Structure formats: C-alpha cells, structure tokens
Length: 169
Ligand SMILES: CC(C)(COP(=O)(O)OP(=O)(O)OC[C@H]1O[C@@H](n2cnc3c(N)ncnc32)[C@H](O)[C@@H]1OP(=O)(O)O)[C@@H](O)C(=O)NCCC(=O)NCCS
Picture 1 (spheres, rainbow, N blue to C red):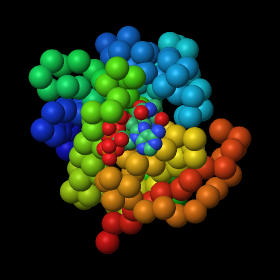
Picture 2 (tube, protein in one colour):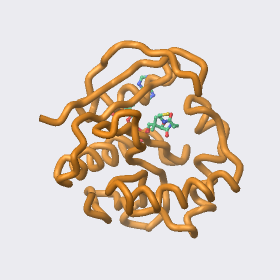
Picture 3 (tube, protein in one colour):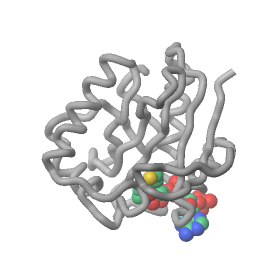
Picture 4 (spheres, rainbow, N blue to C red):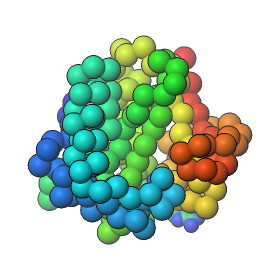
C-alpha cells in the first residue's frame, strides 16, 4: 500500500516508535479494548509497533497510525493484519475514546480498503470479526460496504463473533 495516505480529515502513516504514548492510550485502555481481546501493557505495545513496521516492509500492508490532519493528534489505529490464508487480511480499527462518534473509524477504514484495492497486492479478501456486544463496530463495517457472513467461535476472545467480509474482484 502506498503510504502515507489521506482522507478529508485524516492522515494514515506507518507506526513510529514515538507513537507509543498515544497508542498506549488506545491499546492500554481496558474500556477501549474490552471487545477486542483486552488491554495491553506498554512493553507489548512497543513490540506491536515494531511488528507493524516490519509487516509493512514484508507484506506491503499493515496497521497504521491515524492522525487528525488539522492538529496532527494521534486518534487511532487502523489497517490490516495477516489472516490464515495468505490472500486474505483482517481489518482492524481501534480509536481513542475521546474521538468516538465522529465518523473517524468509518473514514479511516474506507481509506484503508481503497488503498489496499489500489495497491496491486495479491489480496483477494478482507475479513473482520465483531463482538455482538459492540454494535458500533458492526456499523462501521456495514458503512464501508462489508457483508455479514455468519458467526464463528474465536479462541482468543473465547466467544462467538459476527463475521464480515469483502471480496475483491
Ligand atoms: C468501534 C469504534 C471503532 C467506532 O469508532 P467511531 O469513530 O465512533 O465510528 P464511526 O463514527 O465511524 O461509526 C460508528 C457508527 O456506529 C453507530 N453506533 C455507535 N454506537 C452504537 C450502538 N450502541 N448501537 C448501534 N450503533 C451504534 C454510530 O451512530 C455510527 O453510525 P452512524 O454514522 O450511522 O451514526 C470505536 O468505538 C472504537 O474504537 N471502539 C473500541 C475498539 C473497537 O471496538 N474496535 C472494533 C474492532 S475490535
């Protein structure tokens, strides 16, 4: 994916080691992460930042830092994780609680999907899983055109989640 990329209000770029404090406010926050496998300590977030920097180099896609263009504040993370199938990726989006309800998640996720579609990478399918107790997340996926595809048991969260997908043609 060609990075950085922008929307009307947002910029998405590769994670940097200096993003740690801002990303800790997201991944280190139990309220933000309660539907997404729980919060993480700073040490694990540091390792995740390193992982996502490598992922961009190795696979050409990643989870990106999302900034507000007008202030350069870091408000979220959004992008793709590898899936079991090498032609598939999983969409992920986690935002700082202070910035919920303003349409930022859908704006960032739509931009990620468009950037991936235009990247020339050999990815054929995007998937995402949603805790049924997190309707805002399902709404984001519906807003960007993903389709409900049933229910599946997830070992990491120890629960059934709603699956969504989008296939590139
Ligand atoms: C889920 C999350 C990403 C949504 O971010 P956001 O920027 O508020 O999302 P958007 O504003 O783009 O869209 C949210 C939509 O859900 C709707 N919504 C919010 N709460 C809702 C609820 N309880 N029930 C139904 N819809 C709800 C909003 O009204 C909005 O729809 P609209 O634009 O038609 O009004 C954000 O709350 C978040 O980061 N949560 C913690 C991490 C998380 O759960 N990530 C999901 C994958 S694990």
